Length: 287
Image (cartoon, helix red, strand yellow):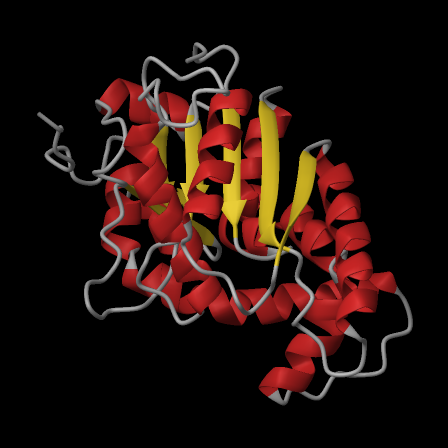
């Protein structure tokens, strides 16, 4: 793996916009620091609309993802697995193993297997299944194996059953939020079209992009409030009580036990923070 001076971040989300919504702040920090970021949508995003055909939507979402990546100068890949029908198959596991081996990330971010969306759960399960196998030479032997698996962390969610997220680090992303909103705004078919339809939200008549982004910021703020309240104690341990009391936008990450484990120093390096880990005892090691 690379040193802290040159890090590589791989975000494996189920759909175009998952990376930005769950981990956009950390992606922005990585690029500002000159580190490499690759965002991947495992599915083609072709199910998330109420008017466009799947074929039309897949092309639209591919263009939107590329535009979002350009905002911060990050790669954005959209794979062809079917949206709304993803399963943690051997094919998907091998695709993820190959991606991790070829990109050689220091940190992989993905969904937990506790999630409302079956595609999210499928990606999380496939990453979990791939985590150790990236180091096994006879698994997918045509792609050179890694001598050490990367660190894998679960992106923030608020689901409590069967087990809630137990974050090892919570980031205050207030300084990055404007850029995150610019990235999310690139996904117009979702944030200004399908999601309002799906969630029965009545949009105002926007006069320009500035008004659109202001509305999107307010919407994202409303979603972040529970994140802030749920993880405020952890946030305080990470960035101090005064900052935690003021933070509006946060991202929370839990280190997966199924991949490489890290100490306090490495956690700070990978998450670009001076914070101490939220749970110093977190994480086990495979025997």
